Length: 272
Image (cartoon, rainbow, N blue to C red; front, top):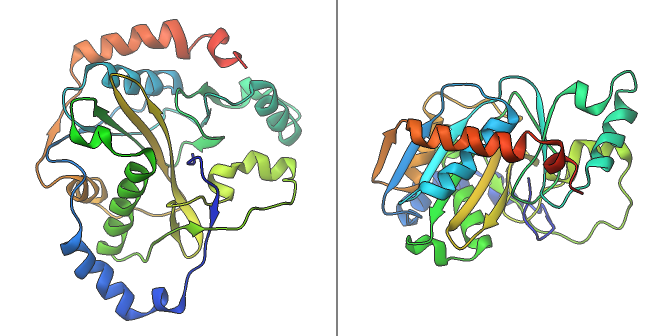
């Protein structure tokens, strides 16, 4: 998952120093201002299909009256790709890598409602953030929200003892990517501005969708071992006034309808 602006990494020696680490853990934590005044936290303990996960995020976008973060997993290996992606390209790339099976048979594939490229799921921690139009954060730019959420991830990792950075501006890459590089995806093969990096390697990216009703950001955190309490600390970085809640049955029922009508259909998957 990635933002619209392509960037790269340029880590200075200062960022590798103990002074920088201490600053991130102490000074920056004190200076930061939470993105939300209140936040509902859903930790979805059930592993779900790709279509169900996308549908629950959309159902939350329809119904949320205050900012929400949902943490979730996948019931088996899955692949999601952005709204503007071409299914034929995804299928061809997967078929080249795994010639004995078709792409659809290999893993659970779903087209996201948000943008971005290909993201593999299964071992990652995935989250979605919903901001209703009534919340002040809805008026912030997409990049501002993207950066603030990733700063929260960075600070959480730093606080739990893992040195992390945000990607900065980069010069354009003029080389044509190989099919294998495309499969690994620009989302996690190539950092973009404000993505989270650990030892120069991208570990967190996201994709977004704006509607009149609200804002949705879907993100993935992978290729890193997350310490116990990560989700709680991440939520606290976003809002000091957060509340753990369970997804109610009405939202789940609406999500089932959305999944059947949209994300689980061939028409949606192959629309481009």
